[in-house]
Length: 342
Ligand code: FES
Ligand SMILES: [Fe+2]
Image (cartoon, rainbow, N blue to C red; front, side, top):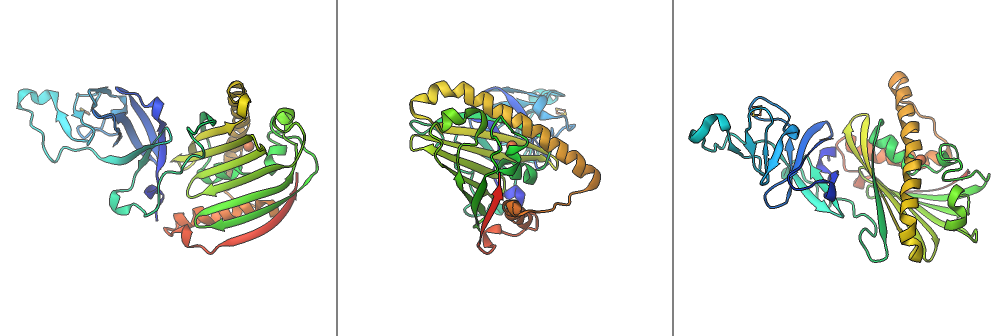
């Protein structure tokens, strides 16, 4: 199993418009992404076969991508369909075909898989975004580039203790409350269930949980790069924050965050507030994670764990397994009960 065998988001479907080309990087592979004549997303190596100019700086016309340097033109399969300097003598040749990668479009995202079909893994598909597009549910979608790796980003997104520091007042207030947590690793995922969490949700506690009753809170990690946070404030108010952390380079991660919620009648008016609030929280994490990486780059990565970090250890065990070329779904199931103070 390799990281390149998984599906990674390269764009929001809406952001990849007909006649447009996007420049992206996934696992250090430079890509030019555009829509072919049929509207299907094409991900091509961002390197012209002629003199290696970046195709992502080219132009798209009738579903074909033209290189900005000498005008070689590629169709959606990567085939060269025009070479201006050859004039009328131009003939397509089998040897003139750019490298293309598999794409898929789901839940309003365009995905790419770098590995060829032969290295595809059975049962590995894009993560199903919870309740995306379902009646009564609304999604706010945010995109941010973090100066850190996927593992540290994913850990941050399901790290509860940091919220009382990094997001103090924005998202949480400190209550010196003991939280009990069940943690389980099974088939490439980590599932976390929090108990006796009440209304220490900072700014919006009064709106989200006016009566201060216990909140249901579940987090999860799914190999290789997805985290999901679920809050059930009451039977009519539910919220998911699902993040896909896409590795661009070793220390650069593009994160697509969906806040999908159902607040009943409040849903529509809540949207701008949720967008503003979610981005404010992410802005704080952008700084915290860039600062962490700056220190790691200087001194190397060497962590020291508390009971609350059991979650991170399990996430790392899954990511390490893939890095070693093994399938984390074969790891033994693990369960733990932990407690920490918040
Ligand atoms: S480098 Fe692309 S056409 Fe020459
Ligand atoms: Fe955070």
